[in-house]
Amino acid sequence: MSVPFSTRDSVWDGSALLLGKEEELQAMSFTGTSDRSVPATKIEITVSCRNLLDLDTFSKSDPMVVLFTQTRASQEWREFGRTEVIDNTLNPDFLRKFVLDYFFEEKQNLRFDVYNVDSKTNISKPKDFLGQAFLALGEVIGGQGSRVERALTGVPGKKCGTILLTAEELSNCRDIATMQLCANKLDKKDFFGKSDPFLVFYRSNEDGTFTICHKTEVVKNTLNPVWQPFTIPVRALCNGDYDRTVKIDVYDWDRDGSHDFIGEFTTSYRELTKAQSQFTVYEVLNPRKKCKKKKYVNSGTVTLLSFTVDSEFTFVDYIKGGTQLNFTVAIDFTASNGNPLQPTSLHYMSPYQLSAYAMALKAVGEIIQDYDSDKLFPAYGFGAKVPPEGRISHQFPLNNNSEDPNCEGIEGVLESYFQSLRTVQLYGPTYFAPVINQVARAAAKVSDGSQYYVLLIITDGVISDMTQTKEAIVSFVPFRDYIDRSGNQVLSMARLAKDVLAEIPEQLLSYMRTHDIQPRPAPNANPSPTSLQP
Image (tube, rainbow, N blue to C red; front, side):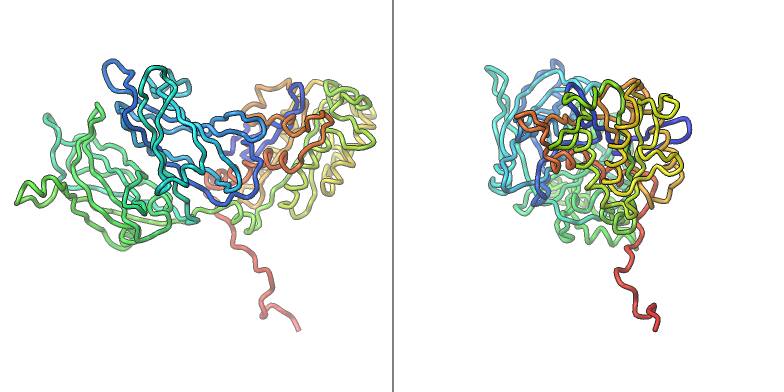
């Protein structure tokens, strides 16, 4: 996710990474944590529940499931994601999936907590606990048909029902389908009015069962609805198998959740694509009515008005097409960091190892520099008195060249950082806004997707202008997790860099999608024969 940082001069839609300290140094960024090798594959988990506790007085529970994953190092449970809330049901089939990286060689512990949510406006604080289940991802994948059902526990003296989990490996299909449908002469289901129809799409599984993958909006009081166009990943619709059955159910919406079944029809992705050149009409059939009534024809028709397919681009597509990551560094030189000559300082450089700041910079920079062809990195300091006048600066070039603050490679940044430590006086306060504004102005000049700006701020966490900063910095990754137990600040540089940089690809993609920027064609690796000169 890219979070725009608004300044007086521009709006920066790049990525801000912040390495900081809270008692010990912390990394603050847009990231989650990951200490993993390349995953074997991605697994999509579909969640359903049966016979949940009914905690509402005048209606049924409104359930939601929260997934927690467990970190290997600390065994801490961290929230991974939430399903939607489904009103008025004890047997929910949730539409929102969980997509997890699967590592065969690791035990990936999962915890599913189920809650009854009173109001959709307050889902961040679920009120009523309905039970929980613990299991490993491998157990779901290894279940018959990659499907397991577990009893929910955690409410003393109560049978909490069960949770059903289905795992399916996602294909590498990156296409996105956009379609629009309408219906004609659907069955009338409401006593005082017409029907309120909506569609539910299901992907067929290899064992003959079906998994929900999309719901349309409800169109009120009509037998001839026209639904809004919607987009869906092709892999969600058919998992890359173009001939796999897609089932569509037609329902009449009821406020109490007991939606009336109107009928169904089936198709496939391959058949849907025919609508790119012609309308496709499907008969909506109700099996019960068909068995009971000899003269039954159908319960209406659904017409596929349009169907288009676009490719979903990846981070690698943009990098292949020439997008450069412009990496800028800003380092905290305020007095709260401590005397650089003392071992307690984050700037302290022992004869045997780099300072904590230098190790963090080296860990992140050596990875991100591979995506910047010129290897020239602007590097700034802030919060110090700089020579010769001894004025306080919140944006001074580490190389002492205000006309060209670029340093050659990460080694050049480190050299300039060490030189600045010897020439400036640590002071304060800690203001981020000037350096963020500087990078924002540069980023605003490039709008064609050829460059993407990443700002790394290394600080002790004592932030004086947090109000102006917190829009860009939204989460914390404790740096102390990367220091060994002896406390000698030996870092696992690979783990640190992974965690700090993990979200950059998705942030870049989000920016490109928002601005409708497609990757350029990858340049030819070798010149064509016709371009060679004799």
